[in-house]
Length: 100
Image (tube, rainbow, N blue to C red; front, side, top):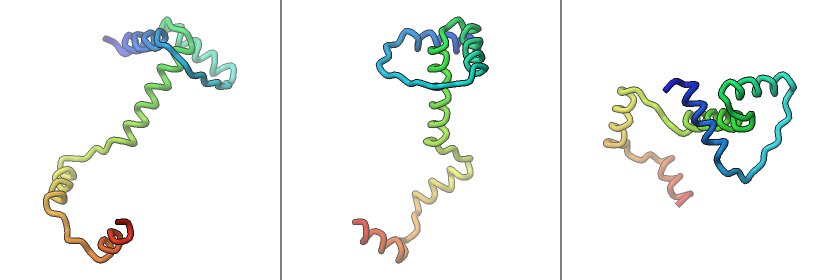
């Protein structure tokens, strides 16, 4: 499945989904024209195109901020630190007392 075909299928699925919230956005006319043209190329309405595109970008942003990717070396170091944690120092003991 090509990217365009996948995008069209996702966007059409979103178009059929029940919606219960509204978001109002003002844009310049050239931006609206851009959205309309892209939506037409996919064969979907502009609202569905915008929802699909923004949802996809939002998921990317969340993934970037919620997922940690480590190299094999860093992952091995992380596991080693879990297996052999350093002994608590004075600052850590104070923090535990303060927040326990």
